[in-house]
Length: 306
Length: 294
Image (cartoon, rainbow over all chains, first blue to last red; front, side, top):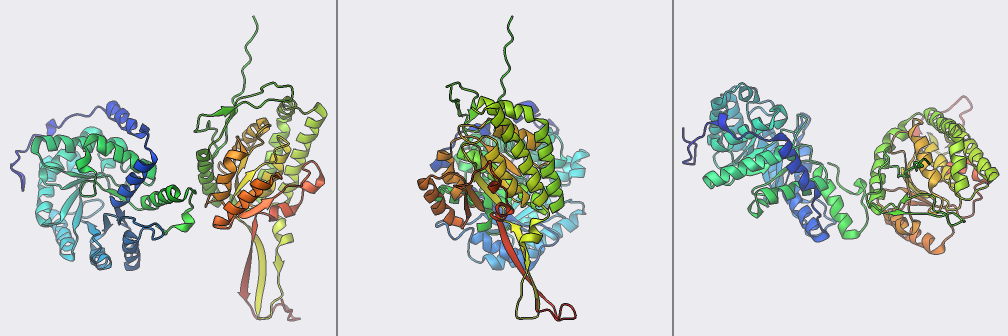
């Protein structure tokens, strides 16, 4: 078996490295204890804003809600001069066109969740059509979910082929593969699913849909970052990472950046290679930036509604 | 063999928890005889920041409670305080009170809590009004809690000043962060234990210990604080508070001449100091057969 776009031979995924649970949790907790000084903190916060995929994925999403989110993506907090935009806006396929029009030439990308998000319980041709539709509407990025049921049954070939098929459908759009780590239960399985996704052609691996608890955690993200590192050493190909769900505080976001820097290095420290899937994180970061600028603790009353 | 006495650790009270200060700093207040009586947390602005977050989170639940229920909870605080009277008297004596003074102070505190417990479901009627207007509207005004209140408690007393400023604020449905007396902080921490065991949800009252000089600036300029109460008569500090509070138009309340051990320290107007008046215009044709013009 040869993966698309690469000449990499596919390993036996049953032999993916096993993860030392205690070790990885202990290692992840160390990243929360770094001392970050004022100037570095400010740069980290600005970088965090620039890495956010501002997300709305609800049944009650409307055209107005998506347009409002797109406005926010470009005008995070106009009172603060020189803020970056977020990286992307993440919506359902039916909202892609609306988002695309609202974002215009701002450079903010549109990501669409496809493949019967969030459960992924649909036949493959439906998933492919879902993806095709999103791409045709103009999505720059596709967030797909893996078939967790099949994965847990040990049908790794099925999961691999499905990701490869979606990757082919994506064309120029970058593919994010959501593992939904909250349903995979163990770190061993997270590692194995990461390996499958990367070898099958994922551009990003992403932790969660945000619909299942627990969503992204630091240890799970660390396991995935280490999978990316091993993949890079083996193949020379960089894969991007997106933790999503449950990251709503700027302090936590800074811990993730420390983890990213110390695991993958400077090459990954930009929104091409790392994203935060979040909706309420932006406001918390903005409040902290304003606090650093004015010296005064802020109130949510003076920031946009999420 | 003599027994080693187990000394109490005095911690601060934030969001229903008893953490140590995040700053890791402590100070040791002394009584008149020069004896150090405890190691006390020297709270930092970050402790205050955390306390404001806790108070803001608690505000929705506390202000939405039925006024009658808030009254019951204030009454419960009084009951618990009565039960731990001996401990408070003991602490007051350590902080230079005579036995007689200490007993009087604790009794006044208990009575004052009962006083405000009674007002919880009454001040809206007494202070609210139905207003005469010249159009066919039913027009009425009611007081509503302003939100999160930052309080620098009276510095001369350990318990009485603290209770006298907290009670009207929470009776009105606000949540608060209180900085205890710098030189007499013992009772504040013990009072936090009373609050913690008397149905007051975590975050409604948060108690810090430390130096007003360090913290008052942050009390005054925090954008998520709606009102600040200051009970001393320091002109410079009052000026600082008024300037900083203008940032988000905080309600500034100055109690600089109140004698806390007298009846003048008990009035529903203290509740009104941290209330906002909401006026509602309700379209209506006529009220009553006499076509009253209100």
